[in-house]
Length: 314
Picture 1 (cartoon, helix red, strand yellow):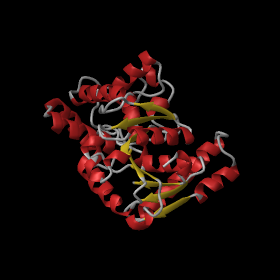
Picture 2 (tube, rainbow, N blue to C red; picture 1 turned 90 degrees about the vertical axis):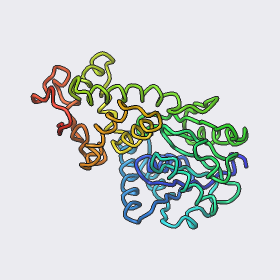
Picture 3 (cartoon, rainbow, N blue to C red; picture 1 turned 135 degrees about the horizontal axis):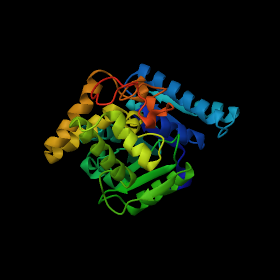
């Protein structure tokens, strides 16, 4: 298959990243079908994509006509067989668990055409963990997106039996949807940027879990020295705390690391309360107006919350 043959994209998993990937593909002229397990989830996904359209429209990145065309190109389905019909490339964004990913991709292998290229948007796993489950390992690799609202960088990570043709086709597809593609020479958890970022986030979690400093002061330290608009806990809120927890928990168990387990337990307290970050308007901070965006935050004016850990932050 050549890049010109790709017309229809299947997005498996319509959460935040599935929505962004579907939006990005539709914005560049591809027909998109979003698959998820319930109509309510898909209804929320379309609402999320409409918000993306509004954001890009207000920034002058798309026109009102283009916004309408993007929505028109996106179909939804709760049926794997219907969703898989005549798709050329699949992008998977289901929970960060290799067993779940393998099960889902195995199911779609039954319904997708033989030509379909499979990709995973995994953040911290490597594709060889579930490549065989896809039923087409030579046509499978990671194609990992970051936040399309702020960047156009993607990672391409093949596993040992990914064909060269597959890597080249995925690279060409990434370019067609306006992305800068970083191609890894071998599998590595966290790709390039996420590998660097995860070290920051895990260190921040360890500091908070050990009550070394408050969440706000940990963020202040990073923001003040690096001159960034948010710190590691603000970043984690934007990623989603369920994702942060699942990744931290998985690697803590994989490496039998007690300190990582303590960090996972620290995040789990928020997840158990439904405080998942920006998507629920409450995580480590309250959104859409978190305290780290307010005047005086770097000076320590956070309402006297220094030293508080595990509580509600505004």
